[in-house]
Length: 564
Image (cartoon, rainbow, N blue to C red; front, top):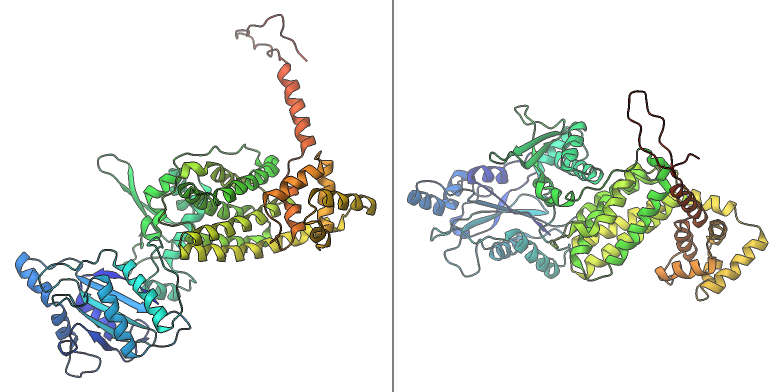
């Protein structure tokens, strides 16, 4: 059961909508199911003598009396709350909806139980699955109703109603969810042939751009380059940006003007203040030749994900929340760098995790610098890294599952549900990307004598799991990976013990795959040693300056200066 509280200033306009045909002729048999005083609330839907104007006068009585005292009508005095059952729920009777309405107005402060001076309200039903509660938030004593946190209180009451009425139990919110599109926005999207509303499209674009950029100015520049209209609000005294709003390229009102949505109206963490928090410490750009560092980028990403998984097992909530926000950025950028077959599922995972990244816990973004750096560098990684890219996709699943568990432990049900859905998308993405890599590794299995030696190594390093590993269908791929790892200069028993200890293998669906991807991200010790020797040799060589161009001063030299 979903309530959606809003406020307005026109009682008559709202009533015409509630008792009218609807924007798409979807309203049928509109009638009042409950009211502050059933005898005093004329029902234009069932009583031929009742009119909307008369009903509006009755509802507005206390507001008009207050206006006579102050000289003006109270602002935003119309309180509106549609309440809808979840898809698949049974249809409630009029008497059941009447009870729902009475409990909602009591819980939100519109009409507390036993309060004779409470606000006037009605509940209108014009469809099988929902009602609309319309109220005027001025009480009989002239005071405004205490409706602070009314949306949260309405949700809380709906959770109780669901349990008592045997309805689908929805997840409780924490007031961090973005505003949902209105029915008018949805209808407009349908007319324009769009699958999502402008608000939803802009939100997705803003998150994707924010994940890629390093500065505030770059954020606005990239949005503009995508054809999105950007309207900046500039402080009159400071001359600095104090806010912004965005408009989709093809979204205009009846006057042909762009329809803008403020950043915070798209999502709470897209406000200018929250954006600046994540961009406070700009990360350096990668070298001009990023493809030469593709392997390093993927390895750095894997290392950062391991750190995040460890943080999510700690009690530092502010640091964990920062890593979850950075993990959302990581997902967006992995979708750009991943193998082609995995991109669609990764984009869906990133979109779903946008909900999981928002909670009431304040993040200490500076503590997640390593993960954000790794996420930004993924922009420059290529998808031809083979097993390294797949290993990172595998690590993403573990991190998202840890995020779901972290939120579940703290009672953030909506975030936990979003993270769990993210895990499903990531598993699908991983399976598509891993299949060809595992097939190629299996095809390259070492000769029998070498494979038998590796079997003995596994039994020596991880005796408790050796039988499962060797019986795993992915064992041939692991054997190939062990050969590559040995060639790279590692001592296999020691390395296997280390990576097996990083994560328990008892619950792993495929322990051989777990070890395969852990080994894949291990650095090449021989290559690194060779680089170190080259660097050391170069540091001992002192280069003489080039001959000066005629007319220029010659740089000073000494007797120890020489040329190779």
